[in-house]
Length: 290
Image (cartoon, rainbow, N blue to C red; front, side):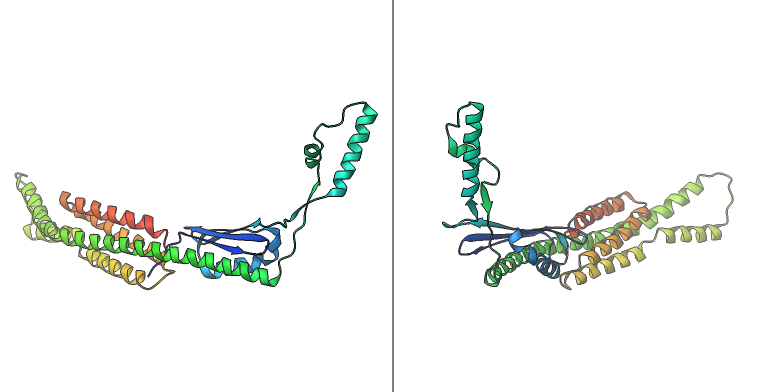
């Protein structure tokens, strides 16, 4: 079963004094394009997190985010009373020296001064990091589950499109037989209209056979059928087949284009155009396969 590269996961770790939220999302990319944003509290664990994501997600444009919300009475932001007292004395002294009024609202003025708030952040202990790690794995599991659901939808789409192309390939056969007769009749009638022109009928038949063989699309039809079958086999082989499926789509396109150039028949060309339309829809979606 194939998987999509698109996914999203979110998990929360409830700790004693803070709530830790983990979010991870991924989009399609040719390789792993990883962006990680973590608070300084857990920075020393960043390499461990990167290795985990690389191992479990493999490919995709991945954004990983951890943010912390302080809860409860205790907070990491503390008022620096010594600094406030120092500012208060300096402002009062300056106002007296300059002969100006002191502020009417001391609190607002002092709280806007630099370094009045100090941020004290305790280091994360192993117990806390264990809970955060559980949230990280839960978020990744959610993303992987999302990928599998999207993969089922893509697989259903690909089965529909490959079946459509196979059915269109069968629709070509009646026109293919009539086309050979049309070509033979058109060339023969054109020669008959040339009065006074002598030609070797045996040589003409040889050249006609050679020309008709150049229009033959049996090889292209066989290769196209094989490519469609191989696409389905690869799709059912499991995840991690996205690049291979893309290569097979290129081969399918090559055979369809060759049939179009050889068709020399309006009805056949219309069928080929419909094949190309089905294939383009496959190629758009195969970019999102892991």
